Image (cartoon, rainbow, N blue to C red; front, side, top):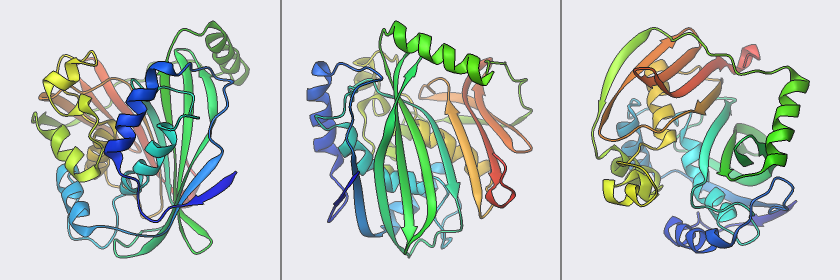
Length: 292
């Protein structure tokens, strides 16, 4: 893998445009080659005004000298977009679905600190609905990794070989889809229609499916949908996280805006749902216990 050092975070708007233009010519498959580049920002500092806007829209307490557990994902997202919008990334950016994120925060991260941020593609894998890419984001202080995540993004397409491989892998590991009993309700949240625009302003993720009903309908949604990373951040703001934390979240179904959702939690588990429709499931543990 080759390190490429960046002087500043990439601008997202040109990357979205480039990814959209290249999407029609991409032919995704799980055995395709992918970028072997690690993008590095060697001395990243946080914009405190944007951080405060992010904390407000997600429900985190403002004014703390510690980054919310999900905020490094926002810092790394432009670099991830640069990799996923590149010509040598085999999956089309348009229609790419964020399916899960695993986060490990090894210690609290001061908002005024300086960090090395690295982002790279970890590989492709078959999925029962197509091909999935894994993106790794790491924050370091000196040689130490202080925060890391693994996000998966799905390109949906017809691939019988991918489905067979995924089923074979599940059979080997013994993993089967088992419906979990619903968690007890904690709160009901009414979501305003501008949540997507407010989160976009704070995070920089201005994907049109999150902004307005008209732009969302162009991609097959009846209304704008909430950012997946907003839903997990909002749940973690309500749930709380240990100083050293391990978080796992799976995005199950989009949240339409405006709308109403139920936040539910018990112990280390949390979820977001509307009636019987499950939008998000997650767990949070102490990293010191080694639990996941």
